[in-house]
Image (spheres, one colour):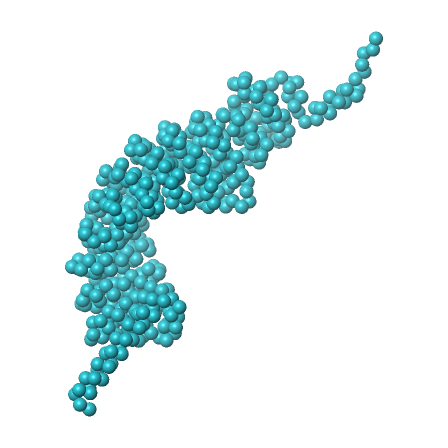
Length: 509
């Protein structure tokens, strides 16, 4: 065989390898092909091609493996069991930028499925190499490495700590300062994923100077970046008063309130979440938000969206109102109760209704004035129907019941209470009658109205255990009226009168 023929054989072999990896990489983009490729043993065929002498074959083989591993955890597990990871990690440090991106993609695709698979990436020594890639000259390599690190860190605090220990955080903070938007996004997302697990991890991110840089990007025109920035600040602020104060000190107010009017629904949601995570800690932080116009802005935001986008805003109002009478009144003055009433009536999801019921309870539980502000919106019957409905989730029933009780125990606005005399179950009825027993002794107009509206008659029909708290309340109400009025409205009194008519002997001349 001549030298020319030998070269032709090698060329054909190289061409065949190239065609094979390109075809597999292409086939792996379509889910319907995955099982066939898996059954054909394509993993074991791709592995030696990672060591191919031709760089494009190496890169395409890595790309194909990444696409397969990305599809499901079985294929990701096959990458781990096939001893492919050590080769990838070795090549990640040695090869060109195209291969680095492809190798990082495989690591990310394996890590995303479970903590166990992410741990396998850590165990094969990938973290140090990925962190080195964060310093690469090529932004695409940095981005690919940041993706992989994020998928490892998001699972749990142990994996996140491993990413921190590898020295990733300061480099991720540098990445959010790079000009490339895609790199900024994924670096901010990584900082969010690291911060979310514990106060200590969040503090690590803070110590690297992340807050100031994140705060500067709140008004960036890129919606996806804003989502990640707001998420990262939320995950830092949620853990403690100190961390929340550090976020506030970065002068995010009133700037962050503009995000509540953003066209992007998830920017709205993440901005509401950030404000919620700050508000929940102390009355002082909530007051700061009120002073910045945050309560009114969140209420407007709730009115402009639907579903889960509303949820953090609803909860934020509840947290603010829970702190004090004055803060609850700030929510009332900003027209928060009517907006929550709308959410309770129109939202189909039970968990959103439950959060709304909880928020209303925090507003209405302080004083008679607060309770009245909730009661006049006619929300109590809605809460009662949600509590009574067999279709309501257990959580919604519990939250509705607690809301009714906490509002009723402060409510002295009798027109809102009276319908409950007719509809409420015994455990709620007790609180309603209790409120009447507190108000009627001191209000002659209310006493008269209670008779003419049929309330007194209804109270006489209630069957209470002798000596019970409910019976005491009924006795207190009855003591507000002349005995003959009470008798007149008692069950069976008309029969007694008729009997007296029957037995009455008229006086004749």
